[in-house]
Image (tube, rainbow, N blue to C red; front, side, top):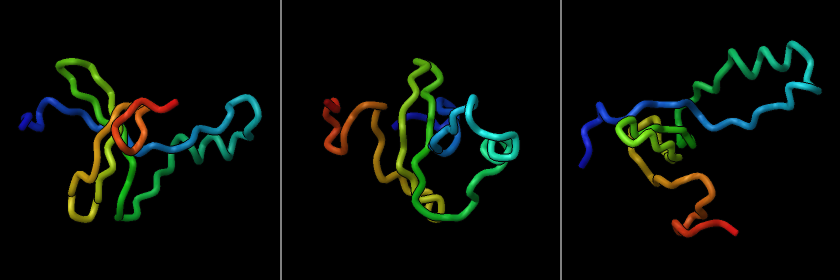
Length: 81
C-alpha cells in the first residue's frame, strides 16, 4: 500500500468543449463549475514520484476506490484497440 502523500487529485473527468466553437458563457461554465453531487465519479489522479497520471472510479460518498486504470485501458485492464 502506498502512502496517500504520494498522490495528487487532478479533478473529475469531464468532456472539454471545443474552445474555438463554444461561447464565453459555456466556456466559463466548464472552467469554473463542477458537479458536486456525491456518488461514483471518474477522476484524474497522479502518482507524484513517477509523475504517472491515471484514472480512478471512486465513490465520493464512501471514499471507496472501485477501479484504477491508465488512459486507453479497457475495463479488463487491457490496452484498448
